[in-house]
Image (cartoon, rainbow, N blue to C red; front, top):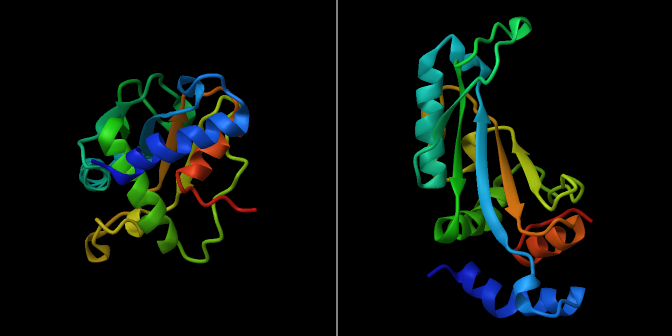
Length: 179
């Protein structure tokens, strides 16, 4: 079993119940899912870029991503409806906690000049999105095999609607926010 999941059940839920004065432990916010999304506008010209991104995100997440397609045509971007423009993967359950543990303890410390993540990147509904400029900070990716730099957004979706509750949940889970 995942250590972070056990820590959440044994330590974090009681701490959140005490801090926010919930009447029931089921009112405590939970991490619902983690979504990793890579938008690749360049993939329209070269399908190899998309194939490389899919394989690298599969290595990072531990499951195969879904290829995303354009919903509308946009003439200014030379984009046609149905064109393949990126990939994304949704992590839930045990795999989600394994990814979060690796992300906090291994990946974030590998960022150059890292001083913590921004505490203000919440969307007003309890979800937190973190942008990553390149995939080389993940230990699963071999630096020698990188042909194209792929940026991605990692979104942490919680069950709460309040940003303060979500911030405390992520802080207890180990997210290093800047002060």
